[in-house]
Length: 155
Image 1 (tube, rainbow, N blue to C red):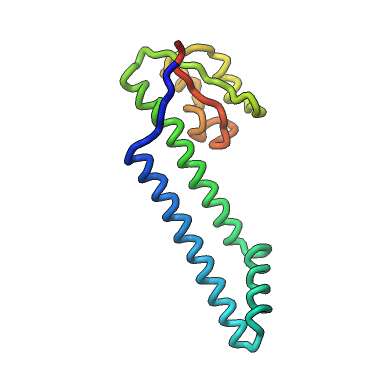
Image 2: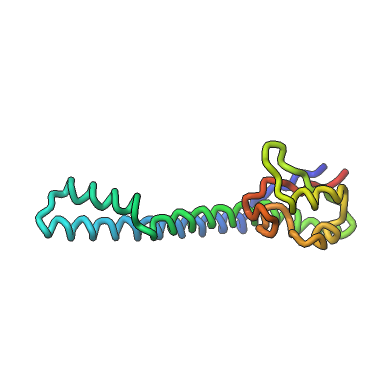
């Protein structure tokens, strides 16, 4: 059974873009926090109290902090999905008659989508796609990009 190694400039570029996006968003949060601290200091509040207050507000109450965390998780999940699904998709385009097995992750609770596709047994890529859930980790199964299943080439 061949193993698919994800490497090369496309993968490196995806990782670099994800890191850059997260860095820009983190810098924005720090800049906003520093502005809030400066505003409180201008009102006569000590730096220590202002910093503590802003940190507590950002950590516990700010909706954008939660959104930032969700966005970063989304970026990582999207990157993960592309790095898992892309190699086997490219292989299957060149080997249309190749057969695959949807392999359930041994340590996970499985959604109905993954169980259904796994029940096909050994199948062509077309047969797997026709079930309607895409490939593992692409985000079309009930478990979405949280999927931990793999698609392996059958021997």
